[in-house]
Length: 267
Image (cartoon, rainbow, N blue to C red; front, top):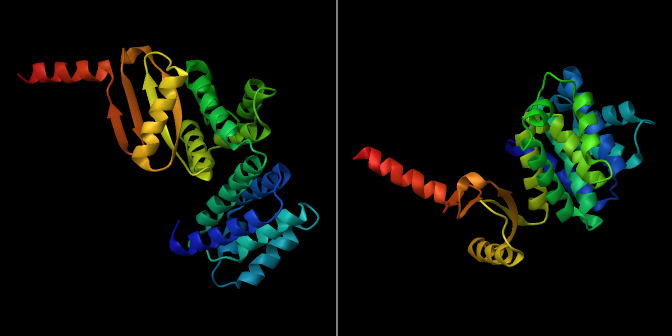
């Protein structure tokens, strides 16, 4: 986001954090984001700098009166009253506020770490099945059909917030493809907990003691809590690959063999 839009979003987020938050309020915000996506003229009207902030807020209040809760109406009016660099940034901010509402509700319930892990595990389940990954990530398949598939996989097995966030990923959060959207949502959950994510790839599962040692080592290096996201891939043969942000530490046997092969080929 550009500076003006970022400031407007921050004000709306502050208003969100100060009030009562429920999954219902988050749903209402996300429904309004979908309305903005379908109605470009409305997006433009609510981000038009020639209209005063209060005028735009009143337009939203009139539009949602009797259709959403008072809390959702207040937050949507707060968004509309801000300054937006583009209509698209207003849309993105509305969707992001709905996501933040879900994350904060999970945080207040003490479930945020579990939601983060469930989202990551869901991504592994999908990516581990070629046909499932092709269906869930296929934008030519109706979103409603793919959301139905999410419920078949997660209902009764995951937190309500996890399921809602998985639906958002299927819908293409922020214009992203499914896998990228899901990864971004996992990262936002970690950011909410003030944790750094370490993507770890190993040939065999780590023991609990090994996980604790690796987590402690990375936390000391990065100066904050580290959330390990572990993928078991026998093709790496042995060793450990760790990616934290743009930092990659690849000590796998497969990587070392590749280095040797490249060196021999260069001779």
